[in-house]
Amino acid sequence: MSETSGPGRRGFLQALAAGAGAGLTLPGPAESQAAHHTPSAAPEAPPAAPAAPFLDPHQLETLASLAEAIVPGSTAAGVAPFVDRLLAEDTPQRQGAFLAALGSVYARVMSTSEVIEKKIYRSS
Image (cartoon, rainbow, N blue to C red; front, side, top):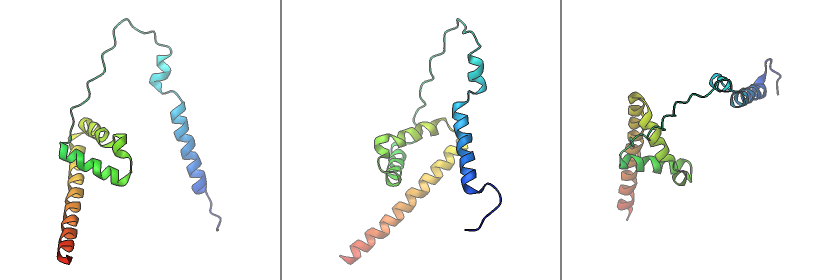
C-alpha cells in the first residue's frame, strides 16, 4: 500500500470514537450546574402525555413490514410504533417527507407485486 500524509482512515475513526466517548462521559453544562444548585420546593411537573399516533393503521403496517424486511426482529422490538411516536412530535415538513417516501415505497412494492402476479397467472 502507498503511504499517505495525514491521519488516514484509522486515525479519523479513532478520533471520532474518542470524541463520541467524551461526549457521553463528560457532563454537559446543565448537568454540571445541577450539582451546585439547591433544589427548590416547587413540585415537578408531571411528564407530558405521549403524543397521539401520527400514522394511520395502514401506514403503520406498511412501516412495520418495511422495517421487518430490512431488519428482522424489528416488529418484536416495536420499531414501527417507536417511529410513529417520533413522527408525531416532528415538524410538518419532515412528516410530509416521511409520508411521501413511505407512499413511494408502497407504490413501488404494489406495482412490482402486480407485475409478478401477471407473470404467474400467464405462465399457469
